Image 1 (cartoon, rainbow, N blue to C red):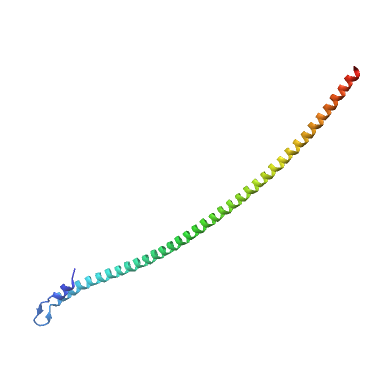
Image 2 (image 1 turned 90 degrees about the horizontal axis):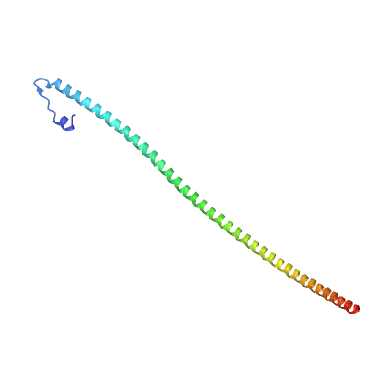
Amino acid sequence: MITPLDIENKKFSKQMVNGYNVEEVDEFLDELTVEYEQKCKDISEKDRQIAQLEKDLLHYKTIESTLQNTLVIAQSAAEEVKNNAKQQAEQIVKEAEGSAKQSVESLNQSIVMKKREIDEMEKQFDIYKAKMESLLISQLELIKDMKKENK
């Protein structure tokens, strides 16, 4: 491969009449042309690769930005779902507490009513018992009177 130093240091033999040897100069120029063409192709290929890499980099940066935005949105949505679930749970607890209080009140009222019914039944039983005692006593007196009359 020819370097810039090779070009600078290249010496052409001089002919007496015409100056440099034309064949040597032509050969060197041919070599230089081939090398220069190859370098141009290499540079062109490298430029194409750089452009493709820059395009890919931009594509991946766009994807990264999209993913970051998606992550932020997902985090926000998750937080919203969490807050909604918490609110619903609190509402369910409040409703359950209210329902439990109603059930307790209903049971307390039912207990009071049953106690009243029991008290009423005990009163009726006492009245019935008193009537029966009175009836038995009167029957007993009637039997005693009948025995006295039979004697």
